[in-house]
Amino acid sequence: MGHDRYDVIIVGAGPAGSSAAKICADHNLSVALIEKGRFPGSKNMFGDTIYRAATEEIIPGFWEEAPIERKVIRETLYFMEADSFVEMGFTSFKFAKPPYNTFTVIRSRFDRWLAGLTEKAGAHLMNSTLVEDILFEKDGPGSKKVGGVILEDGTRIYSDIVILAEGAMADLAQEIGLRKKISTDILSVYVKELIALPREIIEDRFNLEKDEGMNIGMVGFPTAGAIGKAGIWLNKDTISLIVGGHLNHLIKNGLNPYQLLCRLKEHPAVKRLIDGGETVQYMGKIIPKGGYDRIPELYDNGIMIVGDAGMLVSGRHGTDAAMLSGKYAAETAIQAKAKGDFSKKTLSAYQTKINYSFFLNNLKINRKSSDYYKKYPDADFLISKTLNKLVYEFFTEGNLTQEEKFKMMLEKVKSIQPIFKSLKDFYHAVLNWRIY
Ligand SMILES: Cc1cc2nc3c(=O)[nH]c(=O)nc-3n(C[C@H](O)[C@H](O)[C@H](O)COP(=O)(O)OP(=O)(O)OC[C@H]3O[C@@H](n4cnc5c(N)ncnc54)[C@H](O)[C@@H]3O)c2cc1C
Image (cartoon, rainbow, N blue to C red; front, side):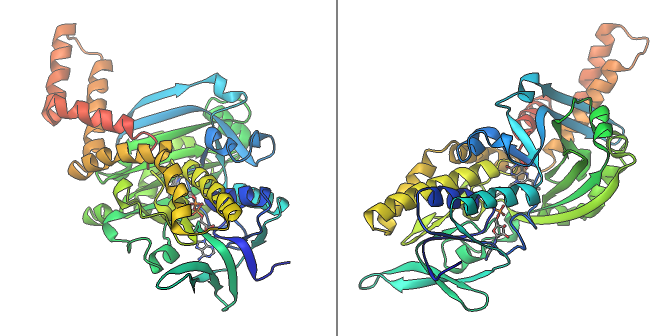
């Protein structure tokens, strides 16, 4: 049964919130984990990959019990043109064995399972419950501290610490001024279609053994010149097809993601992969992709922000940062409880942990890449065009000497853009292989 005071209230039962809740509850803190969805993950959409290394920091050996769809053994990137594609990829059969590398999951199953573990650890999970507001209390002269939350029905619940794990739109973090209002120039929009096919057909079609999985990243053709990406992920008996991009840029180019999805399904490379499949679900999501420069201050008196709510996401690398930031916030809450001090100063330990994390450092590095795409929005489009022209000529049999052929190939490449720019585009496409 719930009560009206907890050590920690966590808003949002996504990977960030549930990770924080589990660790706090494991350490005997009283925890309310509040989720607006009918159940955790009921509305969550993503690109289906979770990362073993980060997930294991919360639940060692999680794959034994977690609702895993497939163990990913192959990562592929398609540089696409309308009637051809150049493929880069890697398969490791080591990734098919423990401890594995990455997995595909369906969020409505995975998030629900993870939140279930927090309940087993003693947290109080409240589904179908929207947190409407943050409660403040006086904390000495001129100073205030977060002291709990107000629910949609007006119920007040109090706590020493609130952890905001409310995901990318972060209404509450914005409301209390910890995060800036979202501007449209940082919004991306993605649509996803889930296509059902018998498991054996999927494995046969993608050349996989039972339970093995793969991902395909797609650039060039799918976004018709706009900044964005597409991808295919394999679940047990469904294929996820995702496409989308930078909102302003799509609008500027007169594109909408649903049209892009329909167009992509007709591409011969994709059509044959999903042939005979039945559409079982459509989902869409708008995400603010602020990058390193938009990361807000992640803590204040009595409050910490974790996961996407704190902009700790670089596209497809999101669940790992979410889970680890949840862990760091939980560790900080446990220390604060032991000291009986929930001030900003004590909670700054959370920021220190984040500052040393690999994901923050990666976000810092990726900043250069986002600048590159802002400067050259059609970089992926041009490199796809270039590579396809080059490889087409390479494999097309004509009555040319090798010397004539290479000269012709060079001319073709130069006719699109200077070679040095193509090399830079290629570098950025590979660097951003997994970043959405
Ligand atoms: C197209 C796309 C593809 C992606 N692909 C990948 C991928 O392959 N791998 C990866 O690791 N990441 C991927 N990501 C990113 C990943 O989805 C996020 O980084 C991750 O879900 C963040 O977890 P979170 O717990 O911070 O937030 P969320 O998962 O968004 O969870 C937030 C939760 O809070 C709840 N909530 C919100 N407000 C309230 C409120 N006021 N009261 C109560 N509950 C509330 C929501 O219902 C939700 O359950 C992708 C994202 C997109 C959009």
